[in-house]
Image (cartoon, rainbow, N blue to C red; front, side):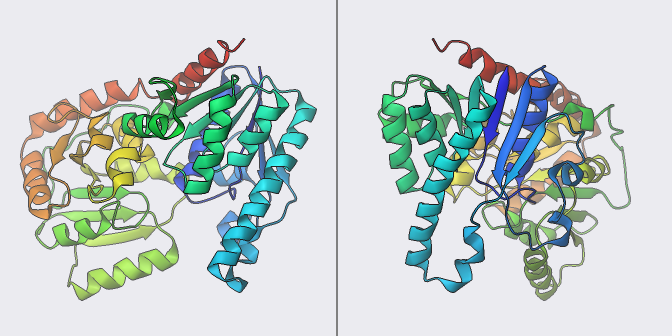
Length: 386
């Protein structure tokens, strides 16, 4: 099949959605499809981002990437009042919708695929008659929701997916769609990055606890700082975050007199497995106070954690327990509760047999969540369009 993936995102990017997009396209290609990624060329501030996507994500050139010259609204953002910038962005998104679909027609694709940041591209794909797939990874903002609602209520050739059950239900209710119209399709992992069973240590002078992801309160980074103060004898490694974010949290840790936490900062996606594999326990401390974190987020790091086989401790929230089962493939703790997290860390570290059990079950579970399996589900759904 000929597949074109259209995004309105800056690429390459340090954010997880960039990895997700590239992994999906790579998997479609690996299944024997002709795939093309279409995205607008954007200004890059970070030197490490001033390269093509294949170099940044360290991927083989098994698909085409078309970086189209287009208006970059972010260049004008510092010079506009907030309300004016929103209107300006709306116009740019509208024009990108027309531009991207017209450009795509030259490939005569069997179907198009989008994420939820491209409402106008989906809208114009509906008028073009090209079968399409839309993936929802979050609840879109109001205007985007209305555009999606108008399109999906009328379209017969669009297949919808979302990354959690709750997100599917809430979107179906808002769009006025029948139950089951939006299929649940969680994120995934590239098992090639995690080969072999890890060695689970029975003891260590300084066990390593690792969190990998963006730096924010809703991701649980503040909770990790609080937890670190009660974890003498453990080393916490935090991988991710841009320079400014790392600086803020590093200074906060210093003010709290925390000396057992280390911020690595942003690393290349290809370097992530090394940090996970060198850990003793992996942490997924997402907050329950954020609806997005609690109900809508399918964290890619969750699946990477599983594939690594390093035991996981995760907050007991629906977006995690949709995948994870406590005492089987993870340990769950009370969300936003540092005392609970400390207890579970110490308890798990003292139970070697439980860590071995969780490691084995995690690896087995990860085999269900591959990018190839994810793409097969999408292709099967597209084939049902008449």
